[in-house]
Amino acid sequence: MAQSIQLVDEARRRLLNQHPHLVLPGGQLYPEQRAEACWRDCQQFLRVITYGVACDCAEITDKDGMNPLLALYKLVDVPVPALLYALTQMRALTTHLLEGTGHAREIRCLNMAIDDLMKALLPAQIW
Image (cartoon, helix red, strand yellow):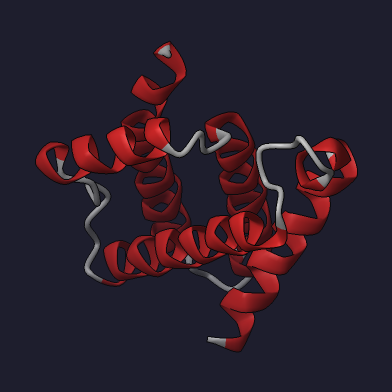
């Protein structure tokens, strides 16, 4: 759990280094409560990805479940491109942790699970 918090924190740091305007007044992650909700979503996504890897199941999303989430994200104006960037950073960080540990299967599954999640979030880009 502590390691996943560190991964999300580092992904957040990287995102905000690239896009500091997101947390400024008028940004999509302002006020702080909005940003905290986003980081909690990242934490939950990482949890689901981890479960998928543990079960050797890369298909971690369900269309019927994702549709209401995408509708909610649209309604509350979640910055999905920023979320996708954070997921990309979490992928890189997690892959780096697993490299050299002999966990090739887990790395493959992790990448496929993140791809599955990102593809499920992409319809939100059409707005």
